[in-house]
Length: 111
Length: 115
Image: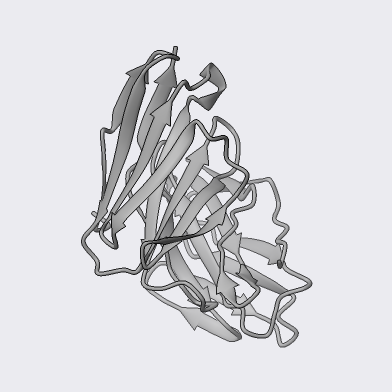
């Protein structure tokens, strides 16, 4: 089971770009990398998913180097409402996708 | 609105009570999950169902009993709980199980308090 490592917390200010890096050294060939966002007392919400190189959607960008041993979630011009916990998931196990959430990164955006 | 609903949203129960949590997904998914999230802790995967069959049970105490009568509904039956079982219980679904790119859709959760 691929294990992920993320910073426990990060602080930023409104309007800045935030980059959160996740390490997944033993990622499997068939694993995708998925990021979720969770607000207090709510369920996690899918943000973005990728396999390699770069993926961009209306919310964020995901950068994945060639060795795929890490990935970086990039949030452009954050606002106060981006304050949340961000999780990186890589969870292919025995041919089945059994998602396992780590502790995530608690992002606090300051005015 | 994610297409996954949970009821009740809040529940207070005594240690001798029996209650059930309900989850329903309107997405046509084949896999459903129960998670527990205690305060300041990461999500703990409790149970996974695929096509109504349980495929994962992460050493959850028997006082938690899941039921999946069909691919749209998932229940978590609770009995003789302990105060440390107080947590946010989250239900999720995904299209299938068995590929590395499944996206999960979460419900709003049930906030459980055991007195």
